Amino acid sequence: MSSTSFAVAVLTLVLLSVSHFFAVDSKLSDVDIRIAGILDKAKNLYMKGVNVTDVVRKLDEVVELYERGDIDRARDILNDIEVEVLELEKIADNVYRSIVISKAITIAFLVSIPVAVYYFLPRVYLYIWFKLRRRWLVRG
Amino acid sequence: MVGEGIDLVLDEEVFAVILAISIIASALGIALTLRPMVSEPFTAIGLLNEDCRIGEYPKRIVNGSSLRLCIYVANYLGYPAYFKIVYRIATNRSLPNTTTPSQKPILVEWRTVLGNEEEKKFPIAVPVYRVGNETQIALVFELWVFDTGKNLWVYTGRWTHLYIDVEV
Image (cartoon, rainbow over all chains, first blue to last red; front, side, top):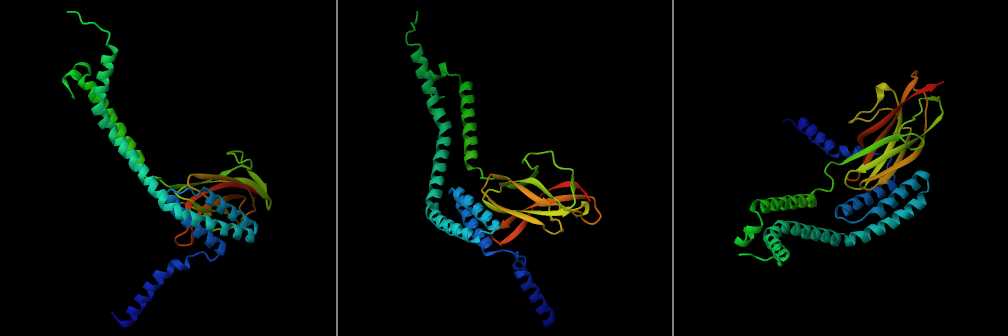
């Protein structure tokens, strides 16, 4: 490969690797970027099982305010949401752990049902059978 | 069977059936517990009339006037997402498809943030005018979602349109 074609290949690779940056919407405002950042965190929190309804509702309010041109109010609410997200991030791991534990308990319970049926059903049935017939007399 | 005495009162076949039912119920319960939160993620956009109901859409409008409609958006992606609805006036030849948005200019856009399994309806007013010599135009509404990883608006492939005759 000649040095010129090698240079062209390298340049093409570099351009390809950064091409997605050119695709970024030039109309994105700082509010858009902040909403996206918070939403990304909210998405991760939601995946961990944290309730982010309030965050989403407030973000929607920010979008409405921004569209109406009330940028200052939108920024104020964004600040509040960022604090709220930070608080939620602190409890996220505990929430996730408790969900995993509750799932494990549910599965253990479900697995134990057939075992319990196999072990207890005949005994319980026999107990009830005898209980219902305790006044019966056996004739020779 | 557990014991000879039990054999006398509880039929083995009945016991086997009950045991099989309990195993199936248990397996089903475990599958439901471990199932993914969203098996088929999707988004939806719909166009409603000015009372936010399906049907009774206007058929004619005066050139250059404003039309009141209602937009419906739904998020079933499995996570909260930031959407924008883009409005364009197109013709038969410039409609979007499931992979490419319409190439006509954006006239109005609305944005909203929706949680998972959340839906929203909101009234809108859009400008309507003739495109070239076409008397019948299509009011096109496309749904875009914000890719938070790339900081980029991405066309979802969901769109809806309303054909309308424009009177001069």
